[in-house]
Length: 484
Ligand code: NAD
Ligand code: 6OD
Image (cartoon, rainbow, N blue to C red; front, side, top):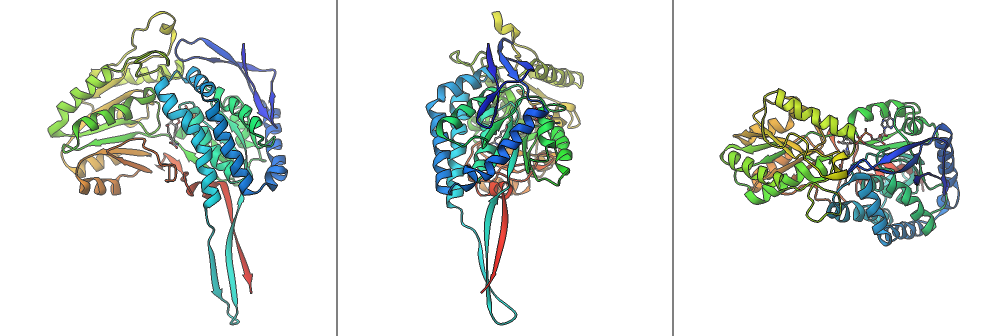
C-alpha cells in the first residue's frame, strides 16, 4: 500500500494516524496519508527555522538560483512520475495535466529564481539640513518561515506558485497540501533531496484544516507569514489565526467570475474560450466562468453552440483517448455540485444541457462524475448565479448594452477574473478598466505570463503575487540611510 508521509527536515516521517487517499475516477484506494499532529507540525516549523540560519541562510543568491533551476530540471526529468501522481489524485485528463499542471510546477521555480536574480533595489541621494548629503538604499531580507496552505484543484501548480517565490527570496516553507491531493507535494520532497536543497528548507505536513495540520500550522507562532489558496470562508479562519502575532497573509480565494461576450466577438473563438473557462478541469478552476453574459443579437446562437461543445466533452479516466472531462475531486464535492444542479431546477432554470450524472461503466460508476451543465432563464438573485459552485456549469443571460454588462459582471462580492470577448478595441479597454477584478482577460482565458500580477479584488483575495509583486509578500524591505 502506498504511503504518503510528511517531509520534515529532509526526512520522510510516518505518524501513528493515517487517512485514505482515494481516486476520484473510481473511488479506488490510492494509498494512506500520514496525518501530522501538533508535534509533527512543530517539528517542521522548527526544522524550517533552523534552516534559515544554516547553509540556506548563508547561501549566495547565485547558488540559490542554481539550486532552484535544478529543482525545475529534476521535476522535468521525473515528469512522468509527477504526471501519474497528479492524474491519480485528481482524475484530470492527461492532456490537461501534461500541458498545464506539471510544466507550470517546474516553471514556477525557474521564473521566480530569475526574477530574484535580476531585480534591482531602489536608492536615493538626499541633501541633509546641515548642507551635507545622505544616501538611502533598500535591501530585501526573507520574511522567514512561510506557511503554505494549498487546495486540490491544481495541486502542484498552485503549491509551487507559492513555494517557488518563497524559496527564491531565501525563505523556508512548511507546506500543507490539500488532504485530497497529497501526492505531488510529497514527491517534491524527493526532488529537493536529490538536487541538494538543504534539509528543513522545504517541509510538508499532511492533514486537514480545523483541529489538524492546517490549523496547527497557521496558529504556530514560529510561522512568519501565511500564503493561502482556497475558499474565502477558509481564508477568514486563517486570517483570524494570523492575527495572533500580527502575521502577514497573502490570499488567493474564491470567485464567481463573469464571461462577457459581445455581438462583434469572433463567434467561434468566443464559444471555444467559454467552453474552456466554464468546463476545463471539470469546472474546478478558481478563474472559471460560472456567469456568462451574451449580447442579445447572438444569444440564441451562442447558447446552442455552447450546448454542442458541452455535450461533446467525453467523460473518462485520464489516459483514455479523446477524454475531455474528468470527475470532480470527491464524493462530498459531487454532492455539493449536484445540490446546485437541483437548486437551479427548483428556482425555475431552463436546463439547456446536463444537470445530472453521466452513466459510467464498470468501476468508473463509483467515480465522482457530473455532466457539464448550462442553464438559462434565471433571475440574477438565483443561488447558482450568486454562489461559487466550482463545478462544470454556467448560467447564460442576455444583455443589451456595454453598461449593462459591466453592472451585471460587477454585481458580486467576489472579484477574481473576467473574460471578455469582442473585436472592438475600444470596448475591450473600457470594460477592462471598469470590471472589479484582479485579472481581466480579453479574447483569452487563463493565459498566463508569470511576470504579471495575479490575485483577487473584493472577497477573492488579499495581495498580488507574480513577478516582482511576489517580493512584496515574501521579503521584508529595509531602508538603509547613510549620512555621508
Ligand atoms: P479549502 O479552503 O476548503 O481548502 C484549502 C486548504 O485549506 C486545504 O489544504 C485545507 O485542508 C486547508 N484548510 C481548511 N480549513 C482550514 C483551517 N481552518 N485552517 C487552516 N487550513 C485549513 O479550499 P479547496 O476546497 O481545497 O479549494 C477550492 C477553493 O479554492 C475554491 O473556493 C476556489 O475558488 C479556491 N481557489 C482559489 C484560487 C485563486 O487563485 N484565487 C485558486 C485555486 C482555488
Ligand atoms: O496560474 C496561476 O498562477 C494561478 N495561481 C492559477 C490559479 C488557478 C485557480 O484555480
